[in-house]
Image (tube, rainbow, N blue to C red):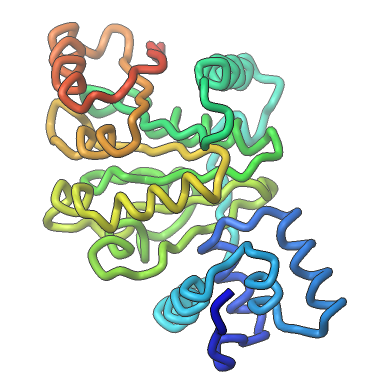
Length: 285
């Protein structure tokens, strides 16, 4: 292992929290790092590097992130009332989401790699964002590290569903090279959320940027489940850029709302991405 500059090992809690978010460290990993801290009398960052959970460049990124995000209130997100599965696990809707989770797990052939899926729909008001959020919650309830990414840089909704402000998010992580601000969620210790951040003037360019692809590669290594929310396919090309990188998509339409022509056109455009359709959901509400 290459030597790590001494200045990087800052023992304060802010750096520890930044590393946990940045590297997607699950509770088991954090406990192992704490044990190494106690045993070897070293900082959290140094113990994380020693155990291989964190790379030296991650510490630099975490330092930068703590400086840039110091003005943001570091509180856990709270799932809003729309996210039924977080509040009423016995509701029929929650059971349907768990059934969908099971179907997606069965269709994930490569168990050695992360289960990554983009949720896409033709238009607005079809339940895409809510389903993406509830599906991520359902995966996290299995006790596995899960990340929800709001890649709808046009009309983002995840920050509203989780009661957050549109501060730092995916658009800043790509455009400025900032560490992605992964937020914890109250009572869901295995779930992290990356909101879209401030609306950018060039969403499709950001989502086609190599830095976004690098972030996805990192998340594949650090999480077992990653769910992407996207923008409407009928209006923008953004979701196609996400589907190309992710490789697996879940289709969402709404009964008595989504025109058949729009669904057919979405499928035609998705075919060019060579992504695999792993399922389809028809919402009734």
